[in-house]
Length: 418
Ligand SMILES: *Cc1c(COP(=O)(O)O)cnc(C)c1O
Ligand SMILES: [Zn+2]
Image 1 (tube, rainbow, N blue to C red):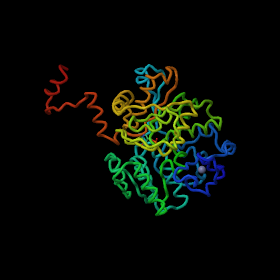
Image 2 (cartoon, rainbow, N blue to C red):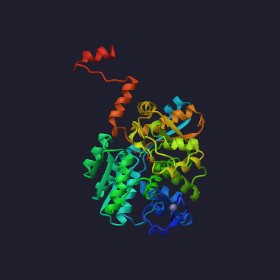
Image 3 (cartoon, rainbow, N blue to C red):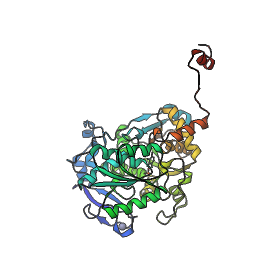
Image 4 (cartoon, protein in one colour):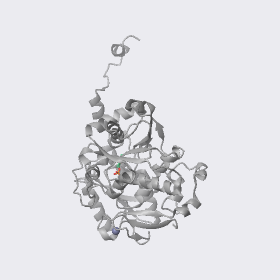
């Protein structure tokens, strides 16, 4: 792994070799998130855009030289990455903008963006032949870890809040993870998981703690830019809970800038739910994210419910360093976005996925984007993850099915004369 220069603490700036520390900078309790720094000159000698164009591997591993793994590392067999980037002209038109794309990460094997990070966790744990991997999660990171572990026969222990949507819990059980349903919030599950991991020596996948999760998530930014022929978009919208995804996108874009593969840095717009708006508040009021007290974390979009966003340093930097913004949207706006995104594009997102679109609607209203800008929104999870919210959302729009007798007359009564 000669392409990694060091791991750098984002609080004190101290540099460590990857062998020296496993996860965080030991100077700051559990807060000392570090960033993996690469030797870009060396990377340039190993990978370039023309070579990539010839690479038949359409998964995150096509970017292997840019990831914190060895060239000969075995990777899990599930097909992770290269999700579709759809143009959405009808939806764009409705909003009065000209260029809109939706990247659909609901298409990943366990149906959320989290597969990108969990794949990396399984590879990193494999390097040290860890017996057990653990994570806390609102549901999707757990399902992703669970599924990718199943693909390689790796044991794992999962901590999720008892309130996680049943589909996500079902995934964990189907894959036969050891599942701890914590009577508390995601924040409680997180603290408990850290404690248990320390006590038992389990490999720790936790978001905002394990620095390699950002490295898995950054692949989405590579894909967006490659799918757009290296003409980076002006703006990318993504929903934000812990802030690891938006931090990962930022990291991927910084890599591409350093390699000289894109010539502009897109603005990153982080979308938060009103009841879980720690980063929105901190950004708007110029508060110190390390000192700020947690918020309640209440929202219908369970995947972005985070009272104390664990990757808040990277998330805030993603927005401020790209000239982006945070926007907040209500649960009603999030729910309304589910059928609207689905009907405008065919992409059915879970609440946290559709929240990115709700954020775009708001940003258009607030004049945060211009009509001619090229805009990408990321759907981070499949709508099938949370059917209850989808049903609530359609009820709100007044759409309902017709219960009919099994006769053609009944159809005609509804549809009128053929
Ligand atoms: C985890 C998740 C998010 C938010 O990602 P963070 O890294 O926590 O900000 C958004 N949408 C979905 C579907 C998720 O699973
Ligand atoms: Zn430090």
